[in-house]
Length: 262
Ligand SMILES: [Zn+2]
Ligand SMILES: [Zn+2]
Image 1: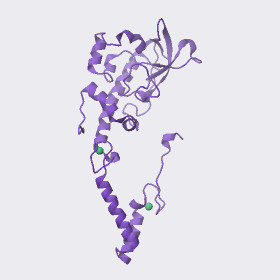
Image 2: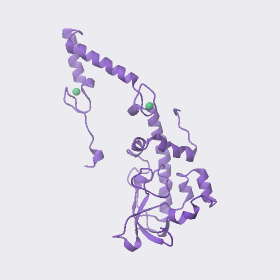
Image 3: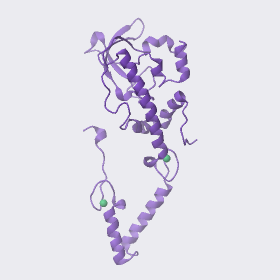
Image 4: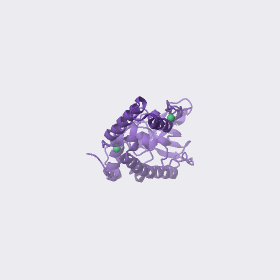
């Protein structure tokens, strides 16, 4: 079983059932109420229970949300976070659609042969051997130096040299040069510079972007991919923090987050 699927379950020390603990156990509460009825609230067990419940209530009133810093709720119940995740999901879905349209148009699927410059005098041909669907996200806006160690620099494609498909090392390949699609991950000023061919990376264009020389039909993405269902975005908010996710949205869409704390 994959690591992420192994969910740690809490078990109740009173009734033994999973999903709650003793302080929220309905059976335990009933037992205490029966005891209160028989022996009164001064009974040691009943009084102990009341003390703990009172402490619990105070703790939840004073708790601070680690996401928005408001009090009275925590990260798991934070409405701001839920709202921000939803907005990010919408932008990410739009980007994924544009990305899929773009690679479909040029036939940049698994098995396609692309040309990408790899250093001086090297106009190598590569074969796409994997589309990393889960890496296609608005916060993966880097055009070069893809790295598997940094979640913000994950490569969209992996490829092998056409001359060494089996034994050759794996290369990370970039996007097709499609400014409409790229406008989802690059700022308007950056897109403008690319259009005018005055971007500071313009001279590196053939190295950054892949040109398809032998197209193939593109496979369908995994189920739910277009809608970004699942935990991708929620997990990104945990792993990268909101700064990393919201900066691209501000930069690209001039989007200001509702209920933003200063
Ligand atoms: Zn229980
Ligand atoms: Zn909050």
